[in-house]
Length: 483
Picture: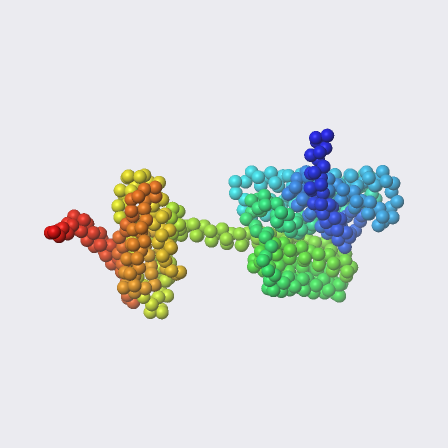
């Protein structure tokens, strides 16, 4: 009884989810009738994509729903084709088809998930080939196992294997390759654990509809309609091969839109293809359309890697340009950006000032409190300096405890900023102590004919003179006034 008490809440909690999976599977199965050439066999079989995605995400928990779906579809086939099989024959056929269908895609989903689980880092270029190979092999296994199961149970009349296996395989493969990513996108909204092994793909819904995206999608569907109508009008089988050229507008969608919108576009493209093929009676060219659809989808998924690689390169570039400890610009990145700012300032005849900042007695802090405290001190200093900068002003680490600032101001304003910055730093304390911080700053203005190198030498010289002056004041304090 304790086991039963635990089971009932579980069923109640997940019941709506399983019911939704069954209803979605059956709805997709009815869509497959658009290109059906035999009971349970279609040149476009969308349920295979849902089965693969569900097994990939839910594992064995999806099996009962999928078996029920296959069983109900078998009963439906008997009604549609008036086969008048007995209840026992239908039950046997439905279970045989369900086990064949689910075992093929279940093994494929398990293999893909296991492979991804062993990867230290999953990228789009890793995920896409693994998905495509697994999808093709799973669809092929589902084809042979499904044919064998249905012919053994008498639901399909005997047909030569060479005449049925290829259309069946293409139908299942088109369903998996084209639609499984869209179903994974839908499932990823609920199952956050999916994100780490989606290869960096972000399937989040866009915040608002895009007129540009709708225009691109309508263009793709319009061109598809032109091809299919031209095929029906000319009755020339070669016209169907124009379908392959539609990879160009669809790749435009993939390169410029989000992963979710790209997957949605491919699904809409597949559905429109099935509708036109069925409506215009283009059965003889349906294999060509499905091959083209698989090729377009495959190219599109590799296209997913372009935005992902762009984002990764941007991230790596950002990491390379930032000091790993303080997060401010590195020396090289600072000067690279400073050259751009200087060129723009020269064009507009705007003043610029370069500041060299050196923390006082930093070696003493490291020696007294350790390098960990020294690192925390540098981080605290940088956080304070960044809080005083206006947008567009640059701050970078030259090395050690020396930093660079580029301000859009003349020499007098820069000197005032330097004094204010020194006051801000003097209010800081070494982390965990009461020892105050201080810094010395050298300032130099960039004249119209100056270079950054020349300005740096002048600012660095001003820094050295300021330090010497401070040492002289320390070594020779002013005499006390006589009372």
